[in-house]
Length: 101
Image 1 (cartoon, rainbow, N blue to C red):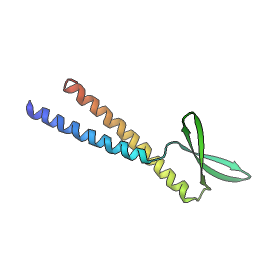
Image 2 (image 1 turned 90 degrees about the vertical axis):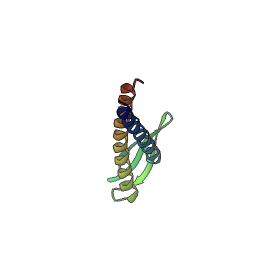
Image 3 (image 1 turned 135 degrees about the vertical axis):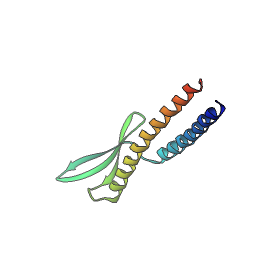
Image 4 (image 1 turned 180 degrees about the horizontal axis):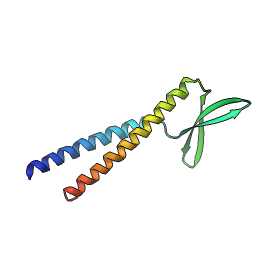
């Protein structure tokens, strides 16, 4: 039984380190979503996010702007990391239950 406990503890440590890595990377990525506004037949894109109780809009540019493409990639990565973090948190809870919390 000791070998199983050692494996579980090792997995727990691995998951904690993975969680730290995900949280650190998430802190560097933008929050929010991309908002499109049409003004005089031109589309302009903004990053919409909440700051305290207000919704803020940061200008990203027109359709072909590199800042817009970069922000889309960052938001996609953020969504992936949030899903992975959710899975890791679930696994950590399972391990805690299995070893008697």
